[in-house]
Image (tube, rainbow, N blue to C red):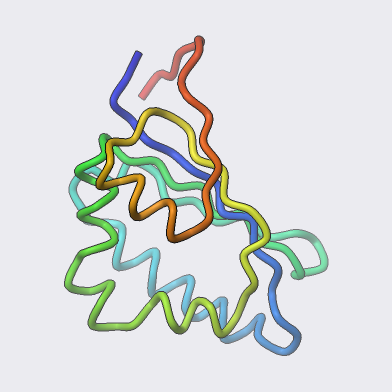
Amino acid sequence: MTERVSWVNELAVKAGKLQTFKELMEEMVSGARNQPGTLAYEWYISPDGGAVHVVETYADSAAVVAHHLSEGFALKNWAGRFMECVDVTRVTAYGDPNAAAREVLDRLGATYHSAWGGFARF
């Protein structure tokens, strides 16, 4: 169907970390905005601010790997700062990522769902 790879990160915000996490989110979104192959990087928050879902969509597996190996990702220590603010409750991946992309997603504890049908307009 497509080479796109998407996933949803379901996160629980740690007590007292919402403002810090909001600032980190703004920084991470800014950093991802111009990455080639990053098609969507959308953050959603529950009304009480306790749960966040991050929906990520990439053009292909190479873009997944590039996002996680980008200079900004490493230099700004986004992953470490991210984990100081939230607990990951679930990561669900969609598509058919290659072995390199699965290595990235496996570190997140992802479960996988292969493409089965449907369409997207982007």
